[in-house]
Image 1: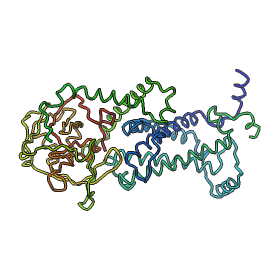
Image 2: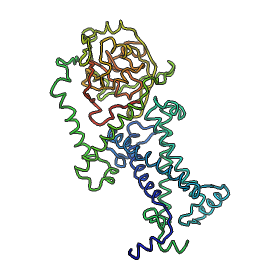
Image 3: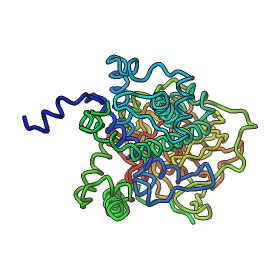
Length: 212
Length: 255
């Protein structure tokens, strides 16, 4: 074992392999879904704007639909693996729960005053809420997508979303919230760059270990 | 303008080659027009990359055909609506402008039948109107994302297929239209109780804009699977494709 490898092996595990793999597959799936979804939206916009064609994926409506309905299997398949892992490994119970309101308020107040507490491997209350929230958002984007794809076969689900047209609005709103999350998520990584490597290697770098 | 084909178009060489030509055009188009998003995903982005990516996407689309056939419940009815919910005016949509819609001469119209059908004698509009009629108010959902509610009336397609002695165990029903449009559906969807050989729209004779003299209406499929200006119907076990399907739209496109 090389010296650097042995150092990595001794470093505490921040993100288990299953979380890292599903995280990056999810990132790719969401990217493809959002960019192809923008192209599909452009074919019949529900609001008074279109997405710049250069930012979209697929080249035309038919191509975008092909990307969208291929990547949906990646998003859902990967999501199911991640949920099963999270439940049965205790990842959610140990790392995300509970979310306490008082702690959340304190953490938000600190963050607004520019004090970001961050300990690798420990999720603060704001992070807990954000990550649980984004799981719920992806579930909503998948369910509203199902209602749009199959408004006859899944008509009860579509009715719950306000019918076919309503489901399109729910799908759009969930996408918009998801994109906002990604913007915030990436901004936080830029503010605290030491969080990036552990999502690749699983372990904290030397400097962070000394802090912990 | 009357555009009755002299030779059934599905038997001509040009029609046989058309899907391949269109696919080639589409591929060249794809090569030139992948958006920024695609470029960032495709390392290198050579022609072979685009072709192999397209192969995977087409394969996934065929997989989705199979999944949708499994999801399709032949007994599940699409929601129906009251007259007050009908969208007025109902939108016109085609791959050409409304003033370019084909003008079919109703008096000389003969619906041609071909393929796995016992009685392939052509049908006049008068004889079609003598068959038992039904009507429905359902939502038309376009692949583009918009939808509109309309009222259609005509002959339940299952009754028509039984009447002409179509092989109901065959896989596909294909349609050839006066505007050179063509498409095909699975037999299970053809036999769905709401699938209607439509002769009327909003209780009046189907207007030219909406597909005179005849449109197939399936509230269980996207709008482009509802062919207008139908000139010929055939039953087959060979995959017939379709105008948009051959360019990349998903073939099953069930709702």
